[in-house]
Image (cartoon, rainbow, N blue to C red; front, side):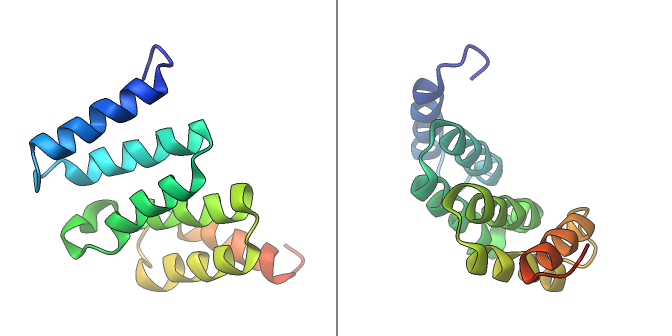
Length: 116
């Protein structure tokens, strides 16, 4: 990853996930994989990877991070403003203690059309 060999890094992460299924670091691996997929322009892949985190209650530690990144991908990369607004609202309501709540609220209001 640090050598900017992103495809090889993604393949390595896939190998880790295959070799150690259900490991406690699987959520971190999925999150890193989604970030790399976003950097390579594989937005559908990044969305699918992040949904594995948000859809599994076992990965609760990174759920707010994954949901916020998912909303940013929808807003900035896919340009689906309605879906992004819905995801930002989920961050605000599901994770009120998250560090992303203030930013999610600001982005939600911007997408809704409020003068922020």
